[in-house]
Amino acid sequence: GAGGNSPKATTAVEQMQKEDLNDLSKTFYGLGMEGFQRVYDLNFKGTLLPTMVFTLDMLDSGKGCVLNISSMNAYRPLTKIPAYSAAKASINNLTQWMSVHLAKVGIRVNAIAPGFFLTNQNRFLLTDEKTGQATPRGLKIISNTPMGKYGEPEDLIGAMLYLLSDISSFVTGVIIPVDGGYSAFGGV
Image (tube, rainbow, N blue to C red):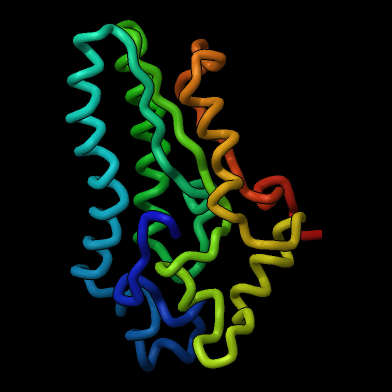
């Protein structure tokens, strides 16, 4: 994900099976709290703290706009990455809470929720390091994204510009998916 994932905060298996009871290290129970906390803090606190600082300056001018970066994982948590999904869900909640809290002082708060963008942070989950081919997980993602591809960074620009501009001056508390149709697809 854009905000970061870590192999230390992922499970080795997508779903726990009875045979995993003999070795819980590959499951939710094998997650190290340090890795989980690092991913959560990077994503959630990495949004919360700068927002607190920058909105203080906006209070003086009586207007402003905050644009948070969420993820489609906030809506549909993916297997293997509980810390990242939890942090992004927290960002959605914070975005909506802050939009209400700051509305009467002229500050709008919104977010975009990117779908799947191949980044250095998630490449190890989506592509085979040796062959460069999609992993089974990567193939699942592409097959559930109607546009049939990963997003490119420039695909985020339109939604970002809209939410940051005055043409969205009556828009606050929304999270816009930028996901190639992933959130609209039921899988069949």
